[in-house]
Image 1 (cartoon, each protein chain N blue to C red):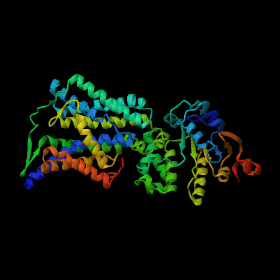
Image 2 (image 1 turned 30 degrees about the vertical axis):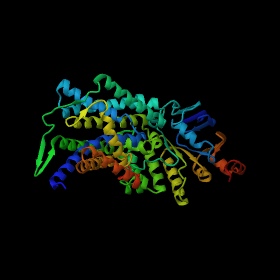
Image 3 (image 1 turned 45 degrees about the horizontal axis):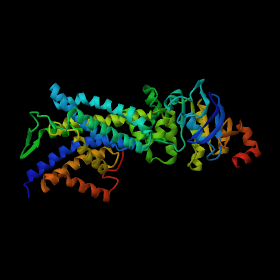
Image 4 (image 1 turned 60 degrees about the horizontal axis):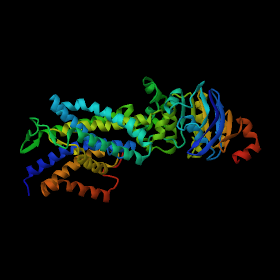
Length: 290
Length: 233
């Protein structure tokens, strides 16, 4: 048995990593909740964002956290355009076509990145990458703490958009009642694209928070999205709050199983939890409400 | 105000409306009657721009609207309260009303919400409640209130009495009469024949996607032969 401070430290660091998972999952669940499709391009968009952060660091010397401010509007625009002008028209409104289009986009992006950046792994060496915060006996990772705070701030912003703006209310309306939305004059295609834009913008934030502590190569996003899918199901498909809480939970579970089972088995805990939830509460831990 | 000329449309290969003609003048209540499956809701979907026409024309306040998007049609003032209400169950009552004004003038929104609450006191009591938790009658009120928020010049009401208790049906027809009294033009699509004919000035009877009878509501009410042939009364 480990001493209590070590356990606490691991769990808190896990919680903070979970926050970034949550951010990836929030985008995914938002798109699922409104468009009712699983966006297979989500991972590739995350990879793209991480390369964006890396490029801004490598060639412009821009700090990853500052780059978020630049990359977020870019990813927002890209998400909007890809849904409005590629996925929408090419999907013809059929779920399985849309699914395949998103899969196709992810293949194009991943291979495009492979051509440009090769399969090399890139990192960013900031002077705060390994900085720690001492709280009593606990040593907490500084960049993860930043990630946690920034994720919570982003979640609040997403919540405000969904609940306090007309576009946000329209997004929630379209999620549950498309015909009713069209009859009050909501342009459903625009709302779909706005949802995609919002989900993609979350990825830009996640990428900036990840790069100081993680690496990127053309496949990196996929690993995160696999965990994010798990979180989306765990939290209740389409539930933003569920994704947020689910992400935090997954972070803690992963940290706990790494600690007790060893690093290489860290993700085992996630999938055991996942199977248990599917068996006993298949609608997700927190139900679905967008 | 509204002119529908030779409208043909349907779903996939199936023709539902086979050349429908219909007019509504300003200030009228016009009823469209007929049993289930004769194309009443299809007509409404065509009017609101949800279902494209195969041929024919729709003119509203002097302008062609049959090539317009649903949003543009709402903006022009042709607003529909659909069958089955189609309210947003996961939004609060007040948010539903706000979205009714999505295409409208935001500065007037507060005043318009207050107007709806003045008409429907129950909605004000439940303003913070999710719309999905309302009773059927309250949901119908909300659907009409949401329609009013779009500042309609012509309001299409599709089966507003469907699924309501007899007492509420009575209330609903009183309300429709009151809205018309305030100057709103109404196209009332109903299966509830007798009550519709009582408040409407004119009526159309639809059968198999065609208008088979049209005339003053009073005449239709008193024509026993018609009632028997087309309305099953």
